Length: 286
Image 1 (cartoon, helix red, strand yellow):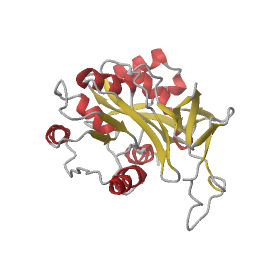
Image 2 (cartoon, helix red, strand yellow):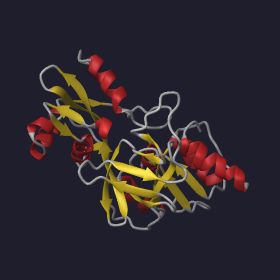
Image 3 (tube, rainbow, N blue to C red):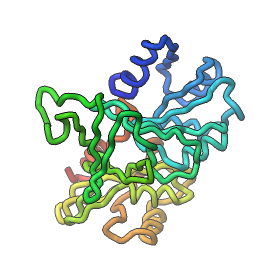
């Protein structure tokens, strides 16, 4: 509840309209499944992590009351949208926003044939433009904050305009996220978007989830590393070999770490910076 999604988009408007909110401290998927089944909840606002976990469980054909699922906080994989719909008949609708300006876009469509990273169309009274050269967006709305405190950053937030660090691509009337400026891996002056490598890794039948990040390299500046959660047993050698068939050498991860789950921040997000620090220290590169 400490950031925009939980506080500004759930607690505050629900209190104003007198709508009950069911909260659980148990984040295990089976506990969420029991809560959704027995609470009578009609709307489930979650993060991609929880929808991925639920899609791996044996779910009921129909939830008795649930009519709307909303995901925010990070990019929702298209595979999760499709597998969750196949199990429940419900589409997960993506919501995109930030603490600096509240809600920005929402996918209100019923389509399951979406581009990866699709975040829908701008909300009412929100103006969203994307620079065609840099793919950097800027947002104008009455909800944009006046600035940061105590250290203003007027080039990012001020004068009614907010510049997120996400990289966006226009798709008709909507948009999709293609990455973040801070996530780009600088390999000998060439910029690698980790989402590109993750899409390749996630296409392999053995891989359930992957996260790619940059580790300091004394020669190349940074090198790509990956953390992977497996669906079925395989080896690092095999996955690297498959990567080399799909990616040029400079984009291929130098090492793949296998994890049971990808660690999340207290806000339910994946931190590439934290993973880079953890595995950089483990490999002696900091």
